[in-house]
Length: 117
Image (cartoon, rainbow, N blue to C red):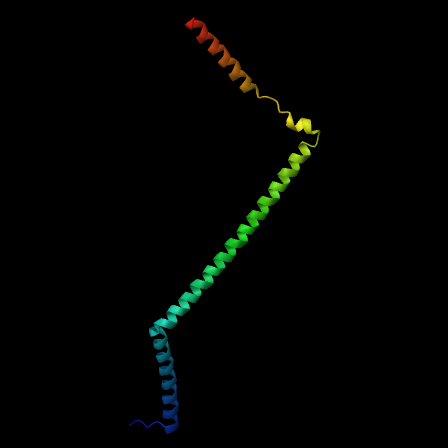
């Protein structure tokens, strides 16, 4: 026959099984606690949304800052280009294509008027 285990061994075995059972019960309770899981999930979603918003705001600030710098540089370049007299800035040459359209329109108009008479 086998020997009966010592009472101390039994107590240690029982304590170990109780600890394992307590861990298992805690895990099962955590799985069934829907409110806590929902709160945890909502908190995670909130944190993720805050991070996304912060990232978007930072990217937007960077983009606006870059655009402002580019506009300032373009303004400085334009000011440097037209740093001459104000008359030089106001005087703009007429594009030759516009002159050609006006002349062609006048010729066509004259031809149409001449055919009618």
